[in-house]
Image 1 (cartoon, rainbow, N blue to C red):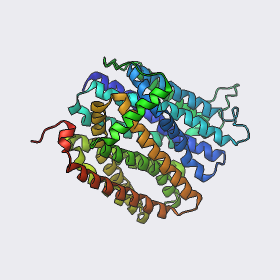
Image 2 (cartoon, rainbow, N blue to C red):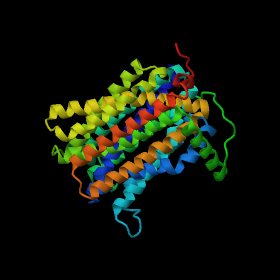
Image 3 (cartoon, rainbow, N blue to C red):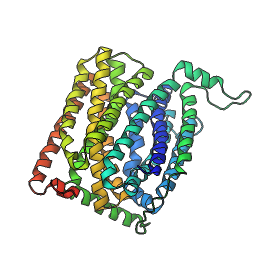
Image 4 (tube, rainbow, N blue to C red):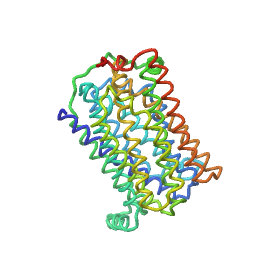
Length: 431
């Protein structure tokens, strides 16, 4: 791997570490403000809205500048969102409670993340040859999942009584900073992680890739994005990889909150310990990602589709497991299955999108689809919570949906294979 790849990894690690720690701190802040239980998944909903709203524009933005510059600017937006979250008492939304301000501040963090993503993934296709993309994605996903593990653990630790008491005791004497609760102290500490990520962004190398001048007219940008969207979905290979990654990210975002709810209701664990179970799932994803990087070359990436069906079945088993050793084992298995099938799909989608479109534009299309899926699935999950559906019923419904959808995708792929061979589309001849 080229040296610049490791700088990208470091920047991604600290930015993702902060994102995941901030989610736990924001959940704690909502609880502090007595927000309703169905509002918790709306944190991710507000975070994700930016991905959907900005999808037609962020691809052009990522391709108009050096990717390192884009990542620095967008990481700075995350810092602004973090600061706004701390000032929820001073900038309330007129006529609405304080927790709405927290949601809006978290949406600003999502704004930075939405513009960050096309640059983060697009630079891989600029920096590396296609044959290294699965390995690179394995490293990136493995490192991202590692940051999720440490992020949720860090967020849980920062809001715990022992650590938060230390942070609050370190408040400046004789100066009222307004940092008075564990959640607020955690958010302040997390802001420094974003600063570290921004410093690494400054050292990301210029790949030398340059694209045609990007449109600045919003109507032309929308038209260009619409063309890219249709092109990728009409492609026999692009539609399969888009369908799989779209399902994965929607399911993954919902599972993130479902595990916390399941830990609270099924296992009687508080938020700080429920966050540890999120970390256990992330350990499994890291294992699956590493195994996929070592075992699945790009030309065999579509062979992992049945693993998605197995993941849905494994999720349903959560309703029947309560002994902690089995809980840990099951969550590792769920995560490993998820990591094993999404890494090859991400690599294949990046390669196909780069061939058909451009680095930034293809990732922007991918982001739109994945984040619409997140919005829809989180909205459905919030609706199930609001209707007082039991956590066991939600787990079963969720697992059945994942397995059934993957079976439909596999059927579609078999139909496509009868028309055009996937190895030819990938750009690899049959042996």
